[in-house]
Length: 140
Image (cartoon, rainbow, N blue to C red; front, top):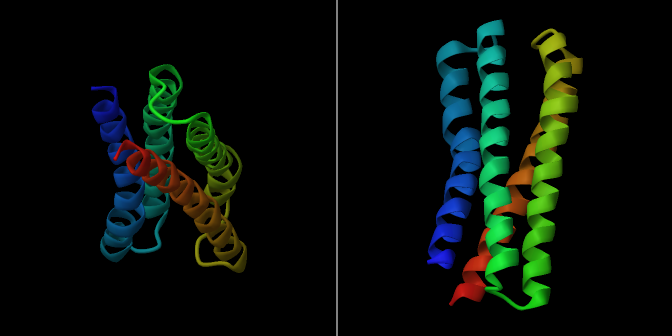
């Protein structure tokens, strides 16, 4: 039962990160365009996804630690990936997004922040995905 719950938590977490990056943000950009409303919508979504994702991640980490579902090495790898993803989400929402909100759209400064944001968000996504894959691999 713990494996199933943890798999569900990882799936929701990773799925929401991917859904935002690959579905929501491109559609919002196509329909709203580079406007202040678009930027505000994206910022609000990133903050909400990181906040909810953190709870999913913390619950998955707790299950990993308490449930003793893997070897110590595999559990450490899962926890390390979760920690990296949480830290990257924190950097994204506390350091990068506020700067983006204060920077004019369609400027070189905004483009640089967007590249940084993409790298940080991408790292968080890949770390969450890695935790999911390690947990799924070990569950078999």
